[in-house]
View (cartoon, helix red, strand yellow):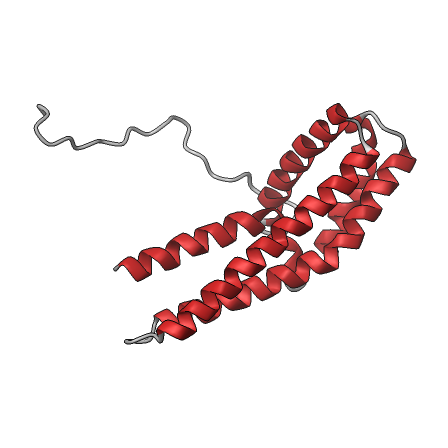
Length: 178
């Protein structure tokens, strides 16, 4: 059981590390990515309070790091699949698992290093306040893109189903009166 817990934990870490850029590594995401870039190009200046030249610099930085990001995400995903396959074996090899875990950890470090280098370049272009706005803007834009990408195609797209009122979830507490 601890191995399965380790696999789930590593999966969550990997997903968390790569979540902001996961869509770029998906096949067929080019058209979506193009639209995403156009939205950024048109909204980024007003959102940050910068001119179009600064927006273009930010987009160039992003474009420069994008291929590396895609490759690392693809490799991380592949390593995670290898880990899952190895753990599905009745008696997984300790050495194979150790190698895969080392590879996953290395990829996570590379992704973080890449994010850090990109962030440093972006910070050199923006003031601290502008950079904070940029981070918040990208977060909200990514959330919106995920919600749009997840909707079914067509002109009559329905909004995601959400309950009208919050649901109560019963909590069992041993020894507490019911």
